[in-house]
Length: 80
Image 1: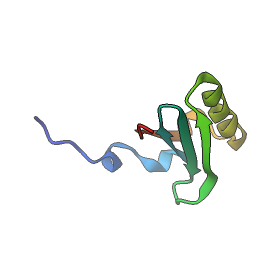
Image 2: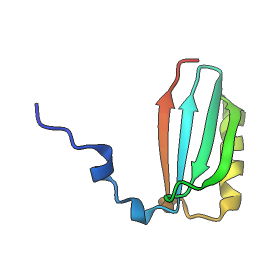
Image 3: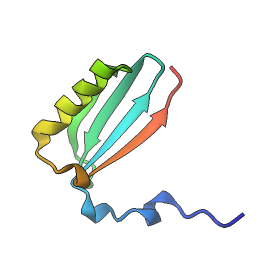
């Protein structure tokens, strides 16, 4: 099997204005939004792992005024 590159070498972080981290749980999820300089834009916020919860996620991101192509989203399954 070939060598796997670290994620940091696969993504040019200079092309992103916001970085969204989402912990995915079986019933609840949590998100946090940072700038590439690690300044916090949205503090950790919980939302339901359901269509209504993901609508809340979109409602949190839209006011930032950042084009979707300039938002990096990372997901992590927490199994909670």
